[in-house]
Length: 332
Ligand code: GDP
Image (cartoon, rainbow, N blue to C red; front, side, top):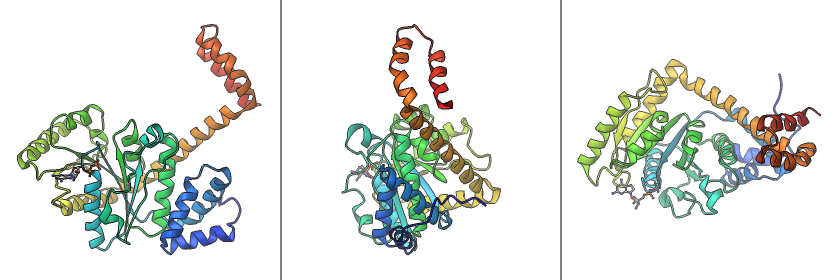
C-alpha cells in the first residue's frame, strides 16, 4: 500500500482535521484558506491535511450550476439551498470565477448575494479563490469541495459564470452539470453554439413567472435542439425544465430530477466511473501544471529561453527545433 501522506500532521493541523470532521465552521474556513494559499509551506501542510480528510469525502452529490450573468444563479441557488435545508440537508456553495483574476473584481464574489442562505447554519458559502489562472482557481475549488465533504455537507453546489472555459472546467469536477438559461432566444442559441448544451445534464429555464408562454416555448425549442445532439450518457437524456427561482416554483421538481439522475447513473455504474475518471484527469492536470512550473523555473531553460524565443520570432529557428532544445534541459 502506498500512502499519499508525506509525514505526519503537526498538532495544529491535526486540530484542523478534527475540527473539519466535527463540522466546525472556523476549522472549515481555516482549512480552505490553507488549501487556497500559494505559499509552498502552506501547500505542503494542505496536502497532508487533505490526505487525512480524503477517507471522509465522496458521500455527497456535487452539482455544477452555470449561466450568464443575470440568469438568476444566485437567486436559484438560494431557493434551492433553502429547499434542501428544509429537507434536512446541509449545503455548501463554492464558486469558480476566473474573471476575478483577470479583472481584479469578481462577478460571483460579492457578499450581498444569497443573503438568506448565508444566515443559515446548515449552509456554507465560499466565494471563488481570487488568485491565479482558471486551472489554478479550479484546483483550489476541487480541494475546497473535498474539505466541505469531509465536514459533512450533503450537497456541494459549484457555481460558475460563462467565462472562457469555466463551464467545461466545472462540468469536469461535478457529478451533474446544470445550465441555467433565460427564456429568450439569443441566450439558448449562444449556449448551443458554444457547445455548452452538449455538456449539460440538465437544462433549466429560469424566470418562467415573467412570461410562462415564452418559457414553455424556449423549453420546446431546446428539447428539439437536444434531439440533434449526442448526450454524454446513453442512459440519460438531459431534461429541460422551467422554474422561477424568485417565486420558488419548480425547485422540488428540479431536485427530483437531480435525484433521478443520481439513481439512474448509479444503477448503470456510470456515476462512480465518472468520479474515478475525474480524479485521474485532475491528477493529470496537476502533473501538467507542475511540469510547466518546473520547466519554467529550470536554470538552463531560463537562460536559453530569451535568445531562442527571439530566434523563433525572427524565423532563424523553427518552433519545433527550439522546443526540442528547451525540453532537452529537463533531462539534465
Ligand atoms: P446571477 O447573476 O445569475 O447570479 O443572477 P441573480 O440571481 O443575481 O439575478 C439577477 C436578477 O434577476 C435579480 O434582480 C433577480 O431578482 C432576478 N431574478 C432571478 N430569478 C428570477 C425569477 O425567477 N423571476 C424573476 N422575475 N426575476 C428573477
